[in-house]
Image (cartoon, rainbow, N blue to C red; front, side, top):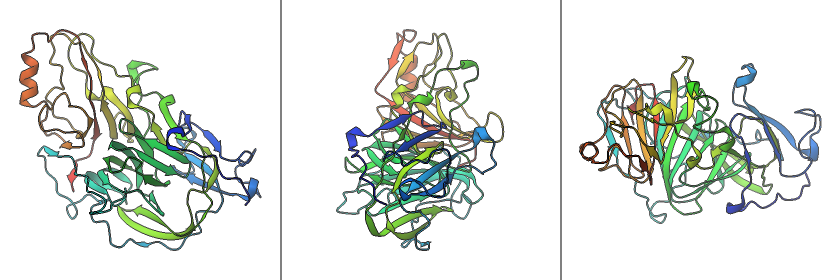
Length: 424
């Protein structure tokens, strides 16, 4: 293949396409590299190879069918056999049972993970990833896992592929420059990115050490929640989800390593080329990010009482049972509080969902003490939880409790799951 190099995509000048969640998009790094009128012609333009990546069964209903066609310099099938990675990654869990995990209904809280200097222990995104809790089975294709990561070096000469499920990544400190088979995504704290099952990607750290959170789902994909009585608008808007534009590299890369997560375990295979050799693509199964979580349009009470936290759902992973999610990703962004004669922080409650919470920046409104950015908490199914004593006493003693107030300088999230969680 003889093609010009792709246009440069420097960190601050990456180009994206709007509406990257579920919509059919197309992109080509070299004009004329997409076939016209068919997906798999006898000879693809520029001598490229056609390869389909399917995120759903071929026979899934059209409205739920996800697939993308990739036109690449060399097909991804040309690699050496996979072998178990050595040494094994012992902090990743894919099967949540009595042999691998412990179950407890006690409320749990974790401090932020210290970022170790690279000189002491170099850790890229893969090595810095560790499981905190989860439920179900990656082999049975149902359930989820909650991970955190703390990395201090970019991935060099290797790419990661999650064959188990989708990754929803939430940076808390340090930007992530993520190269995918569809192009590049720059993701700072305050944004999220979803890498669907099966995509190969590499993570660079332009700001040095980085940490954050990862929600992984097995057997389904994230989508926007239905709005019901809210109507047609509000919460997260489809146009604010951005997908990358095509970018490729064609250098000879002997010894390039593919790290594949399969059944919660890591395997490696080598090849002599970069997996990021896709010159053009089209489809509706692509990585995407939310440009800025501040674009989320929250709804809230305007007279009295407190809305349930589900009103702040950004993305949901549905189950076959109507109204029940495998996992909801919910945020608590800056917003106005105006309810009268109402305890405005989250109320005390127990529910059938387990709630894993992280804090990206600021102070969470219901936890004045001990809950720090980069930390986390877990409230399991039917375990009581709610505001701490300091928050409760400060709230009920306010003389201006009925005055409108703006909650600012904070961004927290909850991954809310319906299964009983097990702590790793």
